[in-house]
Length: 129
Length: 129
DNA sequence: CGACGATATATAGTGTACATAGGTATATGA
DNA sequence: TCATATACCTATGTACACTATATATCGTCG
Image (cartoon, rainbow over all chains, first blue to last red; front, side):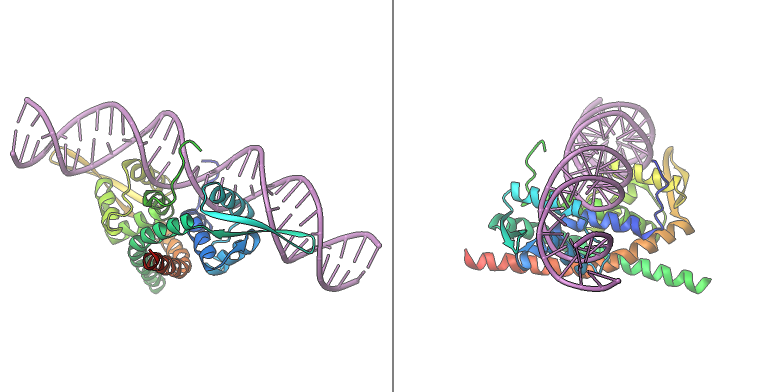
């Protein structure tokens, strides 16, 4: 424990949410259409309304892992001297996406309840102050 | 990379979901009412419909961390010779819960979309086969 | 035409949290 | 009595994202 982690700081929870949902949202984004790394990062950022913002160090190792596992295939497009590595899901990748979706479907109701109760707690506290 | 992680296996995604949402669900469960560790684990398991099942090694270190950070306070109840460490949220804990809820509120819509698209992908594949 | 920011890919080192697997101990029912 | 449920705790490993850093091209503004 180097620095005192502050759980009242949203950045802590953003990190945790990114960890849990990051790869799932990457798969979902690639299911929409093939994308290259940079575009992928922006797509996930927009999907979360800027809440989890994947960094380069999240995107590129993820692409490498998914490629090695046969979940995506990538081909390099050269556009005006600038290289782009466009990735798309394989059948195996879609199978992984399906499995992830089923798991998250089970978790979502609990998450939703927890969110609602948490926002109500917020209101109660505001009323008191 | 010791063993080949199989992303088509739900247990992989359960692990990731637990990582992301575990502590948030613990806070939510404690917001409902004070609980002791063992009860907490069961409450979270039930909330997720058995999807993420927190282990002892998740619960007790979490309780320790939350106590050290001042997010919960615990008192020992002895019931028939068996000790129970009952924990409840402090104001600071409720503040942390609120911050977490706001973050998850932002992420939920994207997650929901991703889940729906993933389940549709499943149907498409079934139709094809 | 040079400085700068946006685009684009990639890795090394670090921090954090859950799982695995183990340990201790009491109450309860077959 | 012996298995199971209850109840708490931790050492170690794994897996993920973040910070910082490196490289290189393109468009724009001064």
